[in-house]
Image (tube, rainbow over all chains, first blue to last red; front, side):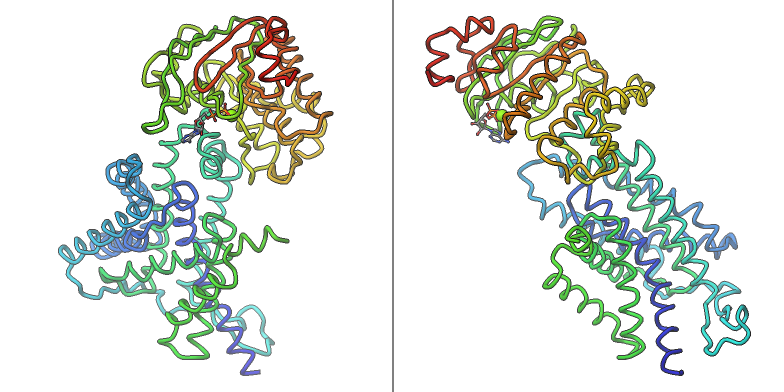
Length: 303
Length: 234
Ligand SMILES: Nc1ncnc2c1ncn2[C@@H]1O[C@H](COP(=O)(O)OP(=O)(O)O)[C@@H](O)[C@H]1O
Ligand SMILES: [Mg+2]
């Protein structure tokens, strides 16, 4: 019984984490799909959003979940700005290889991290919300439950927001003309132009959208995680693994990839040891490259 | 309606079109024929703004197509059914059709246009929820044509619509082209299927290694000794 309880508790934690990972992965996947480049500043964008949320909490007493109203639009604007002023001019020059565009995003990430260190020092910061250690328990709903599971309040609420944002994105991409135009641009740029899609504008919007998604993840993580300028790199890697795992540009793949990674990390932490989660992440990454080169999307297509 | 005046077109430093000029009048079906690599697709891509001429102009209904952003061209009533269909493979048949009617004027009549396309191509209606990438070659071509019609064009550019299709389907493609002409839409068609193309075309131009070398009515060119030798193998 205890064994099962530990397993289920680990699974729950993993899924809650995976929901947030999916949001991070979706942003990078969207950008990958439309621009065919990996945005290696992705985690640093989230770090920026986390500082915004952190200061809004400390200076204005704003609840982290309310900061979504600021971080999402702010990161959209930051993404649009970066794409328009930095990435787009480089994309236009044919002689610059795609590899170099990716290196540009690495540079942007480094600049963001250094600016954060300059302005906010490299101190670890926490955002102590009152409900930080509150939890709901399975026995609250099911009196005679043979096992007990706990559901951390901030994790569950963050997960709920992540699901709602993912659903909204899904609706946007599937049901609106603008969303379909973004998908069309990802699938065939020239054909999209022939249909009257302003492909350059869609590219800019997509980068903004990707940044807004990871910005939302920043607000959702801030109640649980310490914040410091170098935290971006870890999340860039996470987004990268999810994008590969999901199949480079597939939104469904990214959602499933995020959940898989979350569960895998949680399992590694429980059964191998707290500090081993990054190793688990790396193993998923390598295993995926070797055994599942098309990612989850490739697997779904094959069936 | 469409006037191409002395265009030179390059891929990087490599010149592909030399001083190409031709025109298409309202209601005409004009063909551009030539062997593989002659520059037919390049010509159509330049008209649609995907490529810019280094010299010369492209005019459609008095507008300079070579000077406006390419995504504006479909709004002027010029649709392009590209070589190799270029559908959106991960979108459904119906979504592909919707993509043809993004602009306000076409969007306002989207439902009506969908019905028209579905009644012309019943197969597409049966498969409306299926991903375009899973259709057969013939169905994909019909979808590409349907998508072009969704924009309510005044003129359509066809790039090798019969390529890779079985004879029966080739027949169907030419029937569709005839229907489109009967609806009053002007057509510029590029084909390697010279005999059938010249049979439906009012006029035709022959493109050889990036230059226009001949022009005439469909039947004139069908009777032309050199055209027969080069393209009809007789
Ligand atoms: N994207 C490209 N880059 C470089 N050269 C190209 C490209 N597309 C076509 N070409 C060259 O331009 C010439 C004309 O091609 P194209 O217009 O496709 O001919 P057609 O449609 O008549 O078969 C060919 O020699 C071809 O190799
Ligand atoms: Mg061609």
